[in-house]
Image 1 (spheres, rainbow, N blue to C red):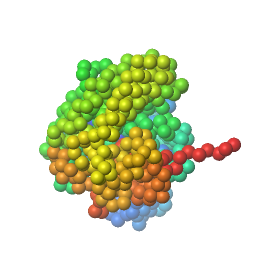
Image 2: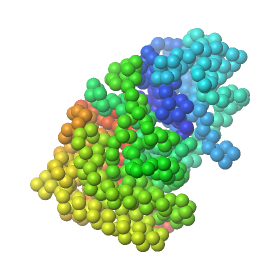
Image 3: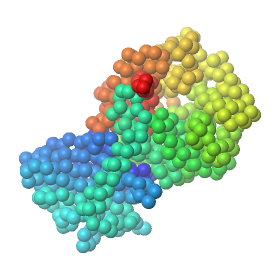
Image 4: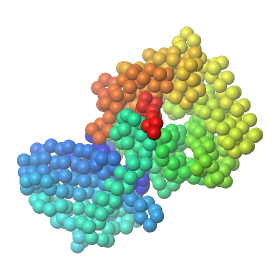
Length: 588
């Protein structure tokens, strides 16, 4: 997947290393695509910039420590750069993040000729909007929307798809809604400078491990782009329906907010020293909890929508011909009890960090009590597990582990706030969860804790027993548990399957990227640093040309599979990097 991610926390896009916008959903993460070649080259529209020569080479990179993408084109006629970015910077004490994509074409050598094609679609390719050319822009007519391309280039050349000589810098500003009503050249250059400054400043405020800093920075920037800032929701991935494995039919829409994924994402961002994202997400979670009469769903829409019904887009060919293409996700109907503990753990730092204590105590105390009550009710109830299996519900060890983590967090919050009943209930529930796992889930003949108290299946998510501190490094089962799980689930020394047993959907062929990072982190926490670094390095080696990772990796050829980029994968990378290379500041 030679794709680079663009975005500004209002929308996301993917541009390939041939200058094509392969994916752009407007006006939100979960909207229809405007450009969706990724899922259908015929019906997905087109927005491309390329040399007129058919033979050319490219190099693509991010401008250092930003989400600005630079692609260099070389052909016999000369060289030019395309700079793609979504404007984002602070203005009037707020984040300026318009629904605007800017593309700058800058000649470097020779006399290159370029061709720009822009043919947007909508309603997932079913709407082919008509256009008209005005004085300095092209406008496409969409019901209830205004889509406009403003440029200093020849509109006729663009509208007709004709090549032209690049004898000066060219700027292309595509907008949804409010059009650009300002000088094109001056505005684009100013927005570029301010956007680069915003991202480099954001990175400067990151806490980094001593090593793997570039990898961690790219992962951090990727996570940031997956928070829909308007509500605080965090999406699981940019795309929909990229297959877990070719032909398997396991193609899902991940443009929504999984509470579990969000909790782990916030943990990684907090480790990096960023807390604004946590505050935004807690507000999102409070709104959800207040509107939820009974249980929390595993996944919600990015505005907190409860119903995100799944349907198949029959008219789309799918990624490399892989159908079905889905919009929506019926996982919202599932019961996954681990979310209560994960949300408690995500909120806990607001009570345990003195910088947020007063505000958290005023606004979120009732939510803490509600989540703990939910753990109490669900402690031994079956569910679908974090992997969203579609077999019979069971009591899953991972869910009980999250009950333990949430109850432990509640105990700490109770102690910090002087809430003795909360502290006592949290301690009692944590002890009850521990007893279930220790007494019923360990399989001494296999050396690991099993997926449920009633089977002996291996599950890579239980690497988290070490990473979350349930199993301390000196626990008699900690090392055998990690190594035995790896032996059972490894496709090679770094790639791990989530599980190998039947899940009610079909056989799983691909390895799950984050599972390898969980393994690397667990090895590091056990003191097996050389092995941990080896696993980490091999996994990082699977990242694409700009350092991005997908959900899955094909164990036969190392190809990236599944939705892209995947927040879980980058969270795993960050946490493993910090475990292998902790922060050790100078003594003086």
